[in-house]
Image (spheres, rainbow, N blue to C red):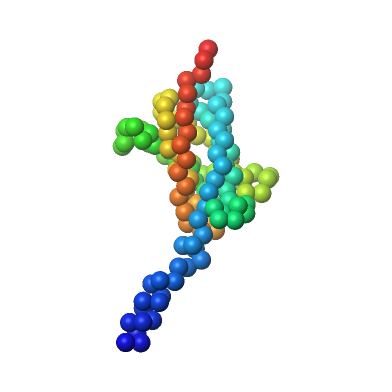
Length: 123
């Protein structure tokens, strides 16, 4: 009986890593090359808004309207001088709506998905 109660309590108590979810602000600017974007990511704790520095972050993308057809291999994001800020260059395969997948491996494991609309530049 005691063992069953202990197991039940352990299963109900979330760990700190599971309880902490992350969020990100994303800002991607086109470069002089079509479909190439310089992106800035600001990582923060979802509940508190506290900036997350020292993160290990990789960024990939896929096109929700064409599952399995258009996927961009993840690239490692580099920390910038500002706290909680990271940068990466993303090269997409075509214009349209993309789902940027931010995979955080440190200090906690989390995946953040943000929509990004890559529009064809007007010339």
